[in-house]
Image (cartoon, rainbow, N blue to C red; front, side, top):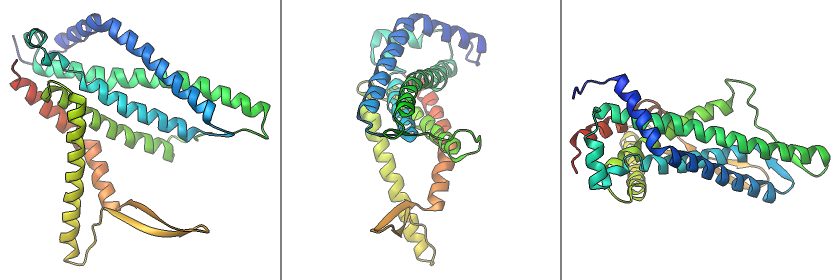
Length: 268
């Protein structure tokens, strides 16, 4: 087989995976709608008298990261079975095409389907709460997120979070190749270790910079006086810039590249 990347073969591979897993995807979508409906029902039930669009946004992000990581961790689950693994490895498609197919279903299909399901359910919940506010404005309040400005802070936050999500998703995609069993659990443990290692790395840089009178602390803190003395902790501007740069341009492509090399070396 020609190992050069072919979009025609990639399209056939995407169609093949869809035809083989159409029931799984359909049932998974229905289960996702049911899960989101339960979350929204609990939000309406226990929201009290004040509802916030920020809470809905947080639900969206939590589900995106958790469910996206779980979905990615099963992307190459066929490699844990000898029969399925041999069948998959002998498919007439290059490793790059197989990886591109996995990215298509993870990065594009999952993100779009999850977002559409969330918007459908969240819209119903938001309309119900808005109806409550209209009927009893003295009792209920609903604070919406202002999405009217394309360059507003909400859109900027969403964009940064999506960069981070694709990086996390790429890590779990790599984990599905490395770990034959309990991929999600082991990848989560590895991810936690990577975060700890990064923190220690930044702390060591901070110690080195402090020798020359410069500061490179991983967090800054300042006191606020709102009737009660308290401290607010936030990432150092330099550290935040490094994390954002890595999330935007390095982490996801790096994990995808390592996944591709790992697939080339894979044996059952």
